Length: 473
View 1 (tube, rainbow, N blue to C red):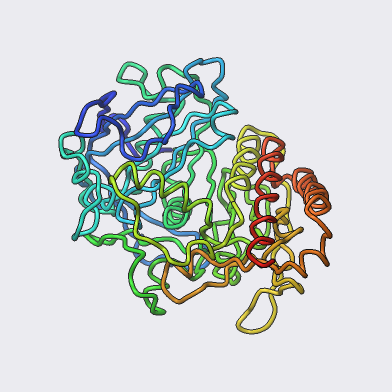
View 2 (cartoon, rainbow, N blue to C red):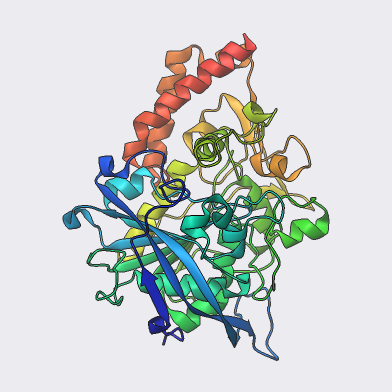
C-alpha cells in the first residue's frame, strides 16, 4: 500500500516564458524532429520526511525500516518528453532523478534507445541544490531564470524521497487524468526510476527504505553507483562533490561501498558500473537473482571524454560561456558508456514487462588486499562487460586517475599505444577495423550493445585508431 497521498499534490502547466524561453537542461536539438513533444510542469504540495525506525539497523543488508517524521511544503518542476504519436509510445515512462552535485542539474533523457523505442521521459527536480545552487555563484534554477523558476522551493533534501514518489505517481498508470496530464492521455503501463552517480546513491536508499512503503515504481536502473545509499536526514546541507577528497569526504560523497540492495525487493533492479564503481562496490557485490542484475564494464571510468563533451554543449548554451577548462581533457577515459546504458535500459524494460531478464555478465577480476583490478598486458581490466574498445584496444583506457582531485578520480585516463605496438597488434587500419567489427558483433550477441550502435561504434573506433597512430607515429 502506498503511504503517499497523491491528492495532496497539485500539478500546473505546461510552463512557458521566462528570461530564456526554454526549460533548463533541455536537449540541444529540437525534439519535434524526432517525433517528441517537450513540456514542463510544476508540482507542489506537502512532502513527507522520513526517519529510521527506532531500534532498527541501518545495516549492510539494505533492509532498512523507516517511518514518516513530518512534512514540509515544496514546489518543484518536472520536464517531460513524450511521443507526439500515441501509437509510438511503448508504455514505459522513465523518471530520472536529476543529478545536482555540480551545483546545477545534470540529466540526459534523449538517448537513441529512448527516442527510437518510444519511451516517455520525466526529468525530476527533487533536491534543494537544483533550485538554490551552491551558496556562491549560484547556477541553480532560481538564479538561472527567476521569472520562470523563482517560485520553486525544496527546503531540504529530507523531502526528496517523497517528492520522487509523488512525481512517479503523477505520471503513472493511476494518475488523475482530469488535472493537467503530463503524459497527455498516454496509456502508461510501466514506470522505471533511473539515476546516475549521486542520484544512483539516492535511489539505493529509495529502494531499500522508501519503495516498500510506496510501490510507486516498477523497476530501477542505477548507473555508475558507488555502492552506498544516502542519508534520510541532512537538514539544510547542500550536496557538493567538489569537496576535498579526504577519506571522510570520499565516504560522504559515496565513493566507498557500504550496503547491498535489499534482497527482498519486489521489482527488477539493475546496476551498471564502470571500473571505478567496481572498485568501490567490491566489498558489497551481490549475485544476480530473479530481481537483480549487476554489470561492470572493463576499461571504463565514471566519466568519459564523450560524456563531458555532451555536457559542455549544454553548459555553453545555458550559461553563455564554456565550462572551466580541463588541461587534461584529452587524456581522460575515452570509452563511451552511453550505448551500454541504452542496452541496459532496453533489457530492463523487457524484464519489467514480464520478459526475459538482462543477460548475466562476468565480473571484473580483482586480486590482493586491498583488492586491485587484474590487468592484462595492455593495462586493460580482465573480466567484466567486454565492450569492443576493451577487447580490441588502441589505448589503455581505465579508471586509473591522472591526479587526486575529485574530477581526476572520476574521469580516469587514456594512454594511446605507440605506432609500433599498433602495427604488432593489428597490422594496418583496415585489419584493425575488421577485428574491431568482430568484437562489436560479439558485444551485440552478449547483449551489451544494441544493433543500432554497431555503425557509430565502428566509426568512432576508426577515429580513435587514427588518433593514436597520429599521436605516436
